[in-house]
Length: 356
Image 1 (cartoon, rainbow, N blue to C red):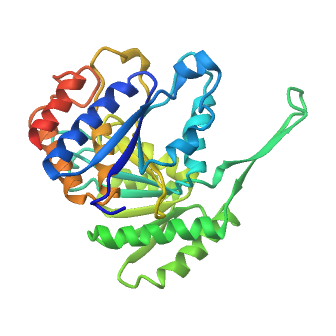
Image 2: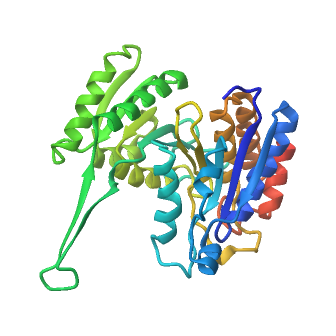
């Protein structure tokens, strides 16, 4: 979209502490929009566990059509203690990712100043890379089933699905992103070609073919198990990683801990096509035990709001939020852990606004 267009944002607070952190993300977005002259409008949607328990529906009729009129979605969190695991995740998160063809999951992995990492001797200069995860195929395609379920002879099959189109469009986007990021210009493919000799062979061949179009980008390959090892031992090696849906899901949680925990980890589910609807969210869960206590950390959601603005073409505003976050984590907050920040959820949002 053009930076001069009105940015339309759908806000899904979701469950537990989700609405609280979403409010702080929008507080900061509103403040930077006023400072940078960004025109936007937003609408709140009550999709989540409470609505499901009250009505039996996750996304009401017409919801997807209405959400499609927005440029972006800011999501708080999904997960309700009274709803069986997987119901909301599949019915809301995966439904939105698939229906809106959000085929890129973008996970910046950056250690902010003042934030502790479990890696001894590593600092913000060492932990600063990005994971690009394919977001619509692999094991998440839902192909599989049961035979003789509930009997001693039960068989369960779960099939990974990979397409040339799905692999190539994700890989190409990762090359473009690596070139634009302009740090090391180094893109690493992470897969398991020595065992997954069909689907990951397709990934390998697509990667090699696309790489020929980007001679300025250095490339290499890691098996996923080796990547987990090197990510801990030498995180400074990485610039951008591109990987499959399942492996991306796993290694980004490891990466989240390296950058200081899920309280600071943000991500985007992106449809890069013109007119596509993308979704941005913190990586942490709904943390229902902290609901209403003001103890939850909103930094990840504020970072997600910055990612939303950057994707919408407002790079300067996004960078302004990023600098403000680093000021707050580096000079104000005592910890990124819930209840140990030294400030309430709302006060952290106010500090970021003040640092803009």
